[in-house]
Amino acid sequence: MATPSETQTSSSSSSSSLPLLDRVAIVTGASRGIGRGIALHLASLGARLVINYTSNSAQAQLLVSEINATSSSTSTTTTTPRAVAVQADVSDPDQVKSLFDSAEKFFNVQPHILVNSAGVLDPKYPHISNASVEDFDRTFSVNTRGAFLCLREAANRLKRGGGGRIISISSSMVGGLKPGFGVYAASKAAVETMIKILAKELKGTGITANCVAPGPIATDMFFSGKSEDDLKKVVDECPMGRLGEVKDVVPVVGFLAGDGSEWVNGQVIRANGGGEVTNGNFHFDGIVIVNNIAPIQWPPPIISSPLLVPMTTPTETQNPSSLPLLHRVAIVTGASRGIGRAIALHLASLGARIVVNYTSNSTQAEQVIAEINASSTSTAADAAALRAVAVRADVSDPDQVKSLFDSAEQFFNVQPHIMVNSAGVIDSTYPSISNTSIETFDRTFSVNARGTFLCLREAANRLKRGGGGRIISVTSHQMGALRPGFGAYAGSKAAVESMTQILAKELKGTGITANCVAPGPIATDMFYMGKTEEQIQKAAEENPLNRLGKPEDVAAVVGFLASDGSEWVNGQVIRANGGFV
Image (tube, rainbow, N blue to C red):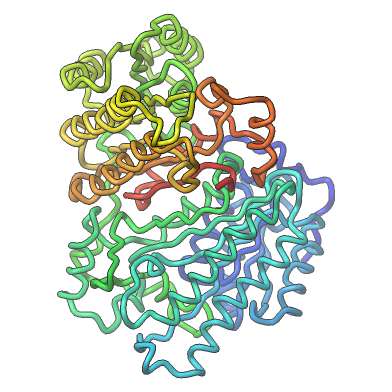
């Protein structure tokens, strides 16, 4: 094959429809299963692919052919291939080095993205007491040592200065802790720990490192050996009422590979439909069934089962990829300034119609809706229709929260689809718990916890069901940092995270998901209040990305969670903090 020339357009030319245009992605274990799905999805976003495989060259070459046959419309030079297959055993350091060498030689640039998808599992599911040393060694050789070697090579060889992304496929079994998965879960727990540390070690490089941990995913081997009762139990425990599919996982990886995910760093996103069960209860984890080393059949045989149902989608006309929220109605509380304002503007840019909630500053709220309405006529099916409205409401008052939803329905004449809880307060004197006044405590919990509860309750009863319903609560990285001076504030946000995660399970069967986004230090008026220049500088220096976050960093994560591609992310907390803890 000819090597692509250096004249290809750089990734800086990426459009919103092709956010990874001409970036080079290495995907291990990519010849089948989830790895295959990831490779196809990244290619659809404009990336050039290195398809890693271990033994089955026929499957790898089929995938390469599929990408090269379908990607001419995404290519800036249609005569050059967009994908190449490279054989490499990821547990061998020399072969991992050769994998990266091949990527650079073929595409004549440094790779931008590494996705670690190769993995193995003992299909006998032995208890630790019965696990053989050979199975332990093989599992850790591929899953842990292989991931380590790829992480090490990527840390030294991915393109720096922006756009560098490392994504490891882990497993929700790390949280599920089911008997029979001891060795496997341990191998993946090690990967998650290494990723979190690597994210900090890559400070200053512009490279982020994250994990995606799938839950039950329907594959041929997942169904093998299980009765209908076993499968039904898995489905019954999932709030989405179905098994996951490969297509549920790949949009999460695609989001993390893009520029919009930059402030998500050192995190584990459990893409399991909200179905993770802990404390040793029944739980199957479909990703582990896709053994990317031992030969398996792909695509899997068609299985006649009522338990495998298609993804639910809104009844409205399918939205184009550039406007994934077209005509959906989003209520954003605390939207007149700061993070809430950025979220409202971003959702509007994705096609949503926005209810801008505010408590006191009508001028700022009107400025937000004026900006949306002035800039969004090109996204509206009816250019004369207003795309945003401001509604005043104190979220701690149940009657006003009800009125907020009433206003949304009356103005847009449809049920709202999306609820973003962004309203919040903090005591800028940062008192210790021993010095926190009752008044401060009551106000903090009234707005942050009670206000969110009221909005969650109203949304659970009034958002559009059957697909596209999304609840997103903005919490705080202080839940992980637990710094002195944030006792009441962090406590109120802990309450929000617990309620949102429980609500995700209670909404089973509705098609509505519920998640949290927990920002780190973000350059807003709320963050700057009460801080010295030295404290602000220290916060920036402590972050692996060497800066404070921007409201737009958080808005991009909320935008993803509001979209159809996030459906299998449910009941989760995404800490959008640049890797800062």
